[in-house]
Length: 303
Image (tube, rainbow, N blue to C red):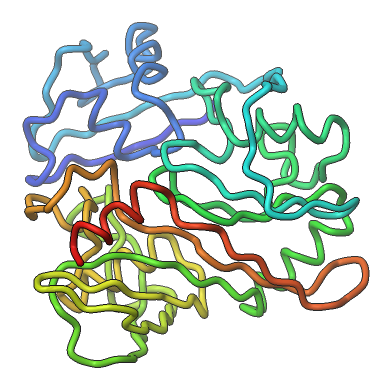
């Protein structure tokens, strides 16, 4: 049985216990956590927690997960926007709001369910039954290009390229404020925010993170940018742009309370370009994922 322990800080005081744990373990859904609380798998200061309990500064929260069994991840006939496909790899344009892979309590409607239906038995198995074919991921609220590996050899090849930072990954985003420089490089270490476990931050001792930023177009109060990742830390672009005072439009985590000219469903961030050495023929290939309609509409409004 897996057990997690957390200490509540002042920033989280007053949150419902299920919301607090959801923030601590982002791979679990809130509904699944609620079920575990009902099964008395959650303790606060050594006593079983009630679902309505609101955590307080200094509380010690212990949360247990039952012994895991291999879940049945079902193929689902979900449409895919395919940018490229051959016997080794599949490159898709993931829509916003789609989770990449299943997690406890959330086993359907993910990209994995969709590619399992599309590829049948042709997916790499290195990352196990929960993540067949998955060699990297992007956030639920980020759209764009993603590589799916159809066999273990392809998986190992792409994973090595990601580790060497040789995969070309360019994201497009709209950020708050007007950037003065046409080009810049942000070299700032990223790690878990010590004041808020839900967030990443630029912190001493974090992992080195490099983002190359190019201005594509300036508006009155916003800037349209291209961000090329040299490293791939969790939330790297979102953290780096917030760090320099230009958080991404619609980012509810790193730009809370900021005004937007339109209603955004999450951050305006799109994985536009992905390029890599093909695992089979060893030639460089590159793909460009078209901007979502919502993104293009926003640019028209800002112009």
